[in-house]
Image: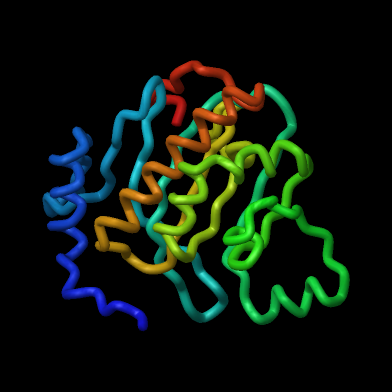
Length: 200
């Protein structure tokens, strides 16, 4: 039987509480509302914020957790929650990575240009636990793009639909992001070198 979750605090309260508990730095907008929170994670900074993406006549808000690092090779990873349509795509032979972990295989679609490295990452207990906690999200490791992107930088990005205020999901995403970037360094896919604030 699925356990009901109690009332969740509003986003402003939840993010400020997380910042206080985890040593985060808050950035506010002109109305003094929380715009983003930066959390230390070793030599890196993990940023929690919201962004909105337009889809024709509608738009969707996402809660994003992201760490930017300097990449060392061409490794790429994309993950999304499995749906009915993704099951049909499997039936028609779409190529995907076999994660090597039953829970991830059952609930997530994994795409990468290196099956072995993706499997190494997805077998980590901290990554498995993080994916279980965030429940539904887009998870990516790709080069940073855009006019302000610094050459050579890559981002671990976890995007959850909506403006998330549930502390457990956000903390799960923060821990997942930290575990991923640390293991990417161990695999030789990223450098253990801080990206300065002006480079993010």
